[in-house]
Image (cartoon, rainbow, N blue to C red; front, side, top):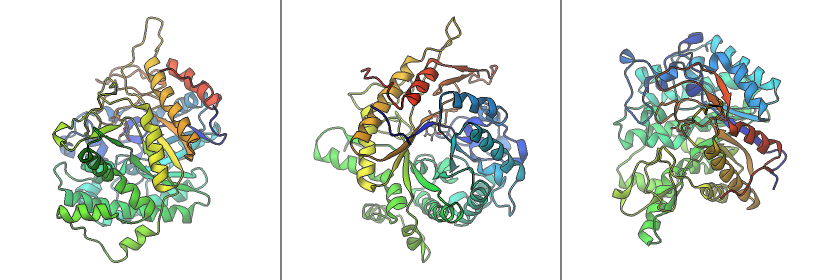
Length: 464
Ligand code: BGP
């Protein structure tokens, strides 16, 4: 089978997980700089900041020409990346942007252009200027909407020629699990505080959708969900209802960003849990008037839900009940290729808008063998099987714009801040303790992905 001719192929990275250069070009401290053990662990206070592997990460800040050339070698037509907000507004509340930060992304986009790779930019991928947390209390404060709008306006204007594809907030539903990363709130924040901050973030997202359309002719802007699709653990009606409620927790974000209103099930949840959102007149009208152009999502694993919530385990970033029919990755994430077809169908059926798979991949430890090679057949198998299911979804009639695998070059893990949890087609010689030469080595999967892209999916095989 062949994927559509205009299907975008590539990979996805995030500024804080690749760039390093933590203080270069006037960059301010970001929330991510204070999470040396990953987003699920407590954050450091700035005066206690210790060494953090992300301070250098894979040094993409200095090595991007080499890295982009390597990605281009696989035939990428698209690179999903993010702009570090703290490079553009180091504290978050300045009135003028930082020119050195803007100039850095000029250079990155120019390099991508050389190879005809389309940049696909996330405005906020798990980081924000820490100044906005310290001075304003993060997204709990409505003023953040204005700071985010200013940032978005600056980058939309600056890169209006180079960037036609945008995303607002990475995995916007993640704030429920990692409030410091998602909305700049303390780990012990209450649901009331988190949902209030989320309301502000949803409004900010709506405003920048309109801004993007007004500033960049022909641009498309989408939302980004962690596709934490849950199956019922059994056909017991109580498990089915528990699953519906579990899925509502993340679909809620899509419902607001696509359908433009707070769904009834969420209003009920707020009522029954004494959550009372402060809104201003006009907020609901603003949400109603800013539907995203497409829906994007990450997908690594599915999970199960049961009426007995004590059976939940944190196997993935989002806790779920393990599925007895599925194997697990080394990091305990359950591997379920068919889940991506199911998820694509669920989202398309619900929203009837184009979809974009913006993250998918296998975190695994790689070994360099005696011949200096990395034979990552497990990664090839994972991606092959998932891409076959994306093809099935296309055959089901789902509109899919493209596929960007997570971490096409090894990078720092988000949940654990490890280098050893590798996703790449390109190995980076850097270890968890920061040692290593930083040398880039093509893995076996590099040649495989190149063939898949070159054949528009024709090289995919039914392996299992
Ligand atoms: C998503 C994030 C990414 C990425 C990925 C893999 O949640 O959007 O930033 O890191 O998960 O997760 P991890 O790095 O924890 O393996």
